[in-house]
Image (tube, rainbow, N blue to C red; front, top):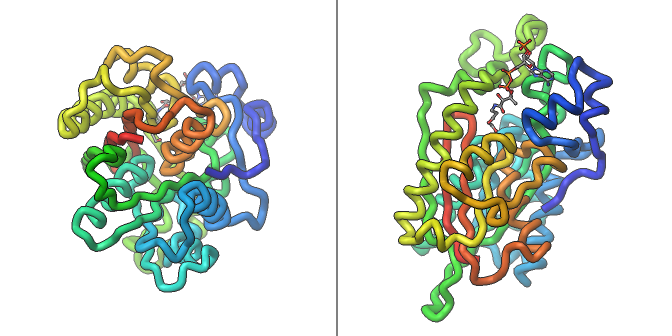
Amino acid sequence: MYVPERVVTNDDLAKLMDTSDEWIQQRTGIRERRFVEPGQMPADLAQAACEQALEAAGLEVDDLDFILLATLSSQHDFPGTSFFLQEQLKAGNVPCIDLRAQCSGFIYALNFADGLILSGKSRRVLVVGCEVQSTGIDLTTEGRDVSVLFGDGAGAVILEANEDEDDPAGLLNATVHAEGKHARRLWIEAPSSGHAPCRLTHEMIDKKLHFPSMDGRYVFKHAVTRMPEVLRESLAAASIKIDDVDLFLFHQANLRINEFVAQKLEITPERTFSNIERYGNCSAASIPMLLAETARNGKLKPGQIVALTAFGSGFTWGSAILRW
Ligand code: UT7
């Protein structure tokens, strides 16, 4: 994983808008987040995370067959972020794509990587979640309900075909869902290719349509229902009992959402791990960042079962079960 060095505390945000450290911590659990410095691009964050993943796996970039990059904050709408990452990794002609499923993007990407590997089309797939959100949020009082939540960061994993019958490690299941009728409850309205004759006008900018808007309570209610539901579904598909899971890693959108989910499933705090207090909501990057931190700090050990669950704009949601 990689996060930019610049730390932005809740008190720093309170200098820009009418908010407070107390409000943000109480409602979300966030204390600080990281923002990029001018000139630092999404592909730079992704590159740092991917190089660490390659090193940890003892692999070279030439060993990769596919690069899947999940993001909601692409470096350029056209063509995205993954192509710049591919260039920076010096990955030759390795195919790459951006995958867009917002905060559930990493789980969606695991699902795709699983398909590529099981079909025999790819042997090793680099899956990266990467977000630079700080450049796209309204840092005034008008945008405070959304802008205090988000942070910048990247995380990466490498999936490899495992033909060793004596080695049970791997992705046991990835289940994903979507329900597009809620898409306008958490979205960025402009630019849009459906706005003729021009995708982005001065008027749209004046109306702040280029910033995310969210019906927070509506999103919250759906998240606390869908996350336990899909987690149970994915566990059943993997034939794993909830009591056999060593570690639950939930998308870091709001600590209160995750406490609700844990309570519903009767999961004790020792079986979870959070980093939202330090990084905020890093959307598609949040789950691979959790994997990286828990693998490094010893909370996630080889052979353990880890359950991942996310919910996000679209609406999208999903869960994946891995034996580490
Ligand atoms: O990752 C993608 C998915 N996103 C999510 O899962 C986010 C889900 N939603 C949430 O996490 C919560 O809805 C929020 C944290 C965004 C908001 O918490 P809430 O308890 O639902 O607050 P609210 O929106 O109902 O607002 C309560 C009050 C309002 O003031 P009034 O109308 O009661 O006077 C807001 O204007 O808090 C005010 N408020 C703020 N005050 C200080 C909203 N944002 C802020 C802020 N600082 N940053």
